[in-house]
Image (cartoon, rainbow, N blue to C red):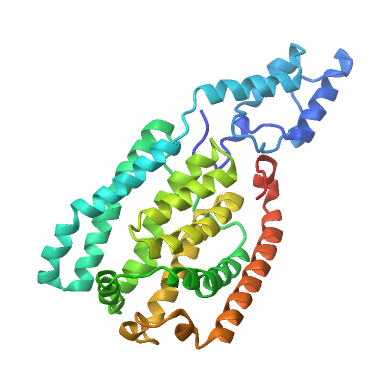
Length: 352
C-alpha cells in the first residue's frame, strides 16, 4: 500500500526516474558476477507517471529480461482498466444541473430568512446551502467513483499570483465589460442587479470574495475540469467547463463573465493543477466588482450606454487596447512561470 502520510508514498514504493531506469538497463547487461541484487539507492527518484506503482515489480521484470517499455505500457494499461475517471461531459452537465436545482429548491430559504435576519445575512446563508449541498453531493459521487477525496491546494510558484490578479482585472474592465454591455438588459434584470449591487456589508463581502470563489472553483475546476482533463483534450475540457460555469449563472450578462474568466482560470489550472490559483482569479474578479460599489452609482450606471460608461469613444478604445496588451503580457509571463513547473507536469501536458 502507498503510505498516505508521504506525498509520494513510502520510500520503498518510490520508483526510478527515466535516467535511473536506463541505469537499470545497463545493470542488466553487466556480467552476472558484477551484478548485485538491488540497484544503488542513489538511482531511486520520484517518477512522474501516476500509473507506476512499485519498484520491486520492475526489478522482477528486469531479472526476467522483459523490455522496460513493455513493462511501462502493461502497467499503465492495468491501472487504467481499474481506474474510473469522473466526470465525463454528460456527467459534467449533470453536475451543473444539480447546482442549478439546489439554487432553485433552496430559494425559499432566502425569502424566509430575509425577514428575520436581513438581506445580506440571509443571502449568505442561502448561498452556502444552495451551493454547499450540491458540492457535497458531487464530491461524494466523485469520491465513490474514483476514491479521490482531496484537492491540490498547494501553491508551488507564488510569482504566479500577481500575474493572474492583474490579468483578471484587465480582462474584466477592458474586455468582459464592453462585451456584456452590448447585450440589452430588461428592467427586471436591472432591478435585481441593482438590488444585489447595493449590498456592501461584511456578509456580502464574505459571499462574493470568499464563499463563491471557494465553492464554485471546487466544483467547476476542482471536480469538473480536473475530471475532463483526464478524458479529453485540454482545449475541449477548458471550453466545456467554462461554458457550464457561465451557464450556471442563469443570465447572459454573467454568462459572458463566467465564460471568459472560466477560460482563463481553466488554462491556469491546467498548467499548474493548483486550485488556489483559480480561487484567486475568481476572488479578484468578484472583489473588483464589490469595490466598485463604493465608487460608482449603481442605479445610474445601469442606464448608461457603453460610451458613457467609459467617458467617450477614445477612452473606450484605450481601455480595450490597453487591457488586451496587459492580458497578453500576463499570459506571456505566466507561460514562463509555468515552465518552472514542467518537471512536475510538463511531461504529461500538451501546452495550450
